[in-house]
Structure formats: structure tokens, C-alpha cells
Length: 264
Image 1 (spheres, rainbow, N blue to C red):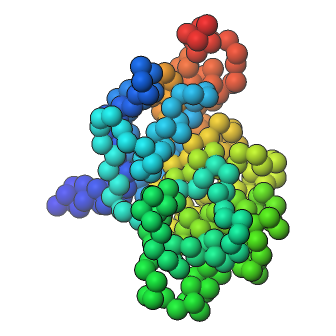
Image 2 (cartoon, rainbow, N blue to C red; image 1 turned 180 degrees about the horizontal axis):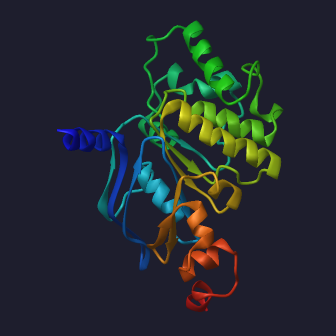
């Protein structure tokens, strides 16, 4: 009985299953039989050298790309995607950016790209929408900026606004594509701390594509991609201690090793 309950709990905690995913662009095999799982309250980092398929894998998981074969199963349909460079609408206020999916039904292409579920017009009053937006902005450390425009904000603030937009529907699954790209170390630390905060407050499964070691260190587990395959997986601490030649080369940012030899 106890074992059955434990299995049921583990099943409920499992939010993402990636099974035997393959993807090619022409003759270039980018992903080759990729499989892994992500549980609730877990942050998974996807790491590897440039061009190893990290962003392609994330785009497949978030529905922006279609795998040639294999399956991606999301246990909760409420998911969101935080883009690499915020992707805010310059002509809209912060309030309108964060609340976009609450204000109107976007076309299917936009809804798919943004990665949030829209709520049809008329179900929420403008006061309710403003209250929701204000709450989400508070969660990412921004208050009182609802009526400002993106070009009035710093890069780090714009990134946090994109976080607020991503969590406006209280998603259980959040995908991040290079969330600290282009930010200075202080702003990067703020963003990395908010990734963990949002995971805790939403009990979400988070998947982060990154090459930044400070971001990697804040994940619970990483998978290292190389030549379209998962070469290594483990915790950040294990990454720096492993004897695996591929993982060790990546962890110590070495220009010598099996990756360089294969590429040479």
C-alpha cells in the first residue's frame, strides 16, 4: 500500500517526460534519441557548447519546433516560455505586456510562441487584471511600473517583466532560453535568484538553457549535450568533480580535450 502511494506521488510530481526525441535539419542530425524527465520543484539546466542542440531541444519542448520522432509529454498544459531577449512589445505598457494573454485571445501562432494560455475577454474585469499584474510584478521585485513602457526600463528590469508575463497564468512548467544573456553580473544574479524563487512559489518544473556557470550553479541537475546526445547528467557539484572527460572539459572551460579533438 505504501509503495503504491509512493509511486502515485512520484507520478504526480513528474511534470515533463522527453522520450527518444530526434531532430535533423537537412543532413545535420541535431538531436539523437534524447530522453529525460523533470519533476515538480526541480530546475534542470541544459548545457553544452554552442550549436550542440540546446535551444532546439527547448523549442521542441515548448512547442515551437516539431521533433522528427519521439515524444514530449507535459503533465500540465499550463506552461510558459521566457525568451532570451525579453521579447516585450515596445508599443504597450508594462501592464499591457504582462496582461496581454488576459486581455484578448491571441491568434494561435502568437499563443504558441508566447507559451501561455489566453483567457477570453470578458471573464475578468480590468480591475481584476490590474490586480493580477501587480501581484506578478511584486513577485519579481517590481512595483508601481505598470504604466511605464519597456524602453523606460533597464535590461534587467525588462527581463523581470518578461518573467511576470510568463507567470501571469500560474504555470507549473517554465522554460527559460538563456535568461541572463546580455546582462551584467549583478543583474544576472538577480535573475538567477528569481528563477529559483518562482520555482518555489509556483512549485514549478523549470528548464533552463544556459552556458553561464553562475546559472548552472543554481540548478538542481544538468544534462550535457554533445553531438546531439546526452553525454553526461548530474548535479552542478558533481559536474565539477566528475572524471568524465566531456563534462570535465566543459566544467573547466578547457580548449583541450575530447570535444576539441572531435571538432578538430
